[in-house]
Image (cartoon, rainbow, N blue to C red; front, side, top):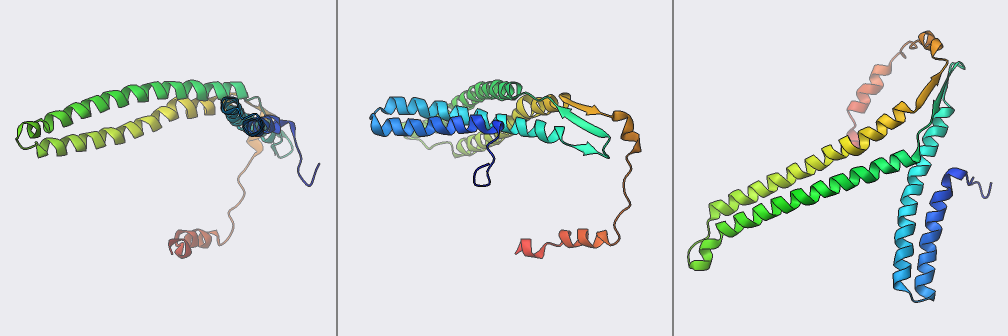
Length: 205
């Protein structure tokens, strides 16, 4: 305990990443080595991200392990940082590769369409304004579809696999007592609070 802060083992990789980043800055100033400073910066940044993931997984396991229902039902989580990091890295690589291919194809098609639509201007004629407008609309729609596709791929390749890993790693101890859990009676007058939240005049202003 130091100044009210507790340095737990789950934070070690975060501090290592920060230390590497600071070391890179010191090296860049003292040794006048930009290349070495950039290498330390990249390593420290990646280490910091992995350390943040490690902290989140450690915290999830810790909090799950300390949940107790009615002093009879407990939980245990064995989520692993390596699995989460691997899922994120592999999913990001797949999404990045597909994004590059789609952007290349859409860019090539869009550039070709614009070239055809404006080809008349190069020979003293008028550019095909309808073709330019239609091409612009199609490119905009394709870009919006691309963004939606990236969101869907992120959900399928990263978010859902991580959730599945977390769920599969949770164990319930004392599950035979789950039938004893009952919902408590509703509070009197609770409906007024919900109605007041629906009319958030201050938030609107």
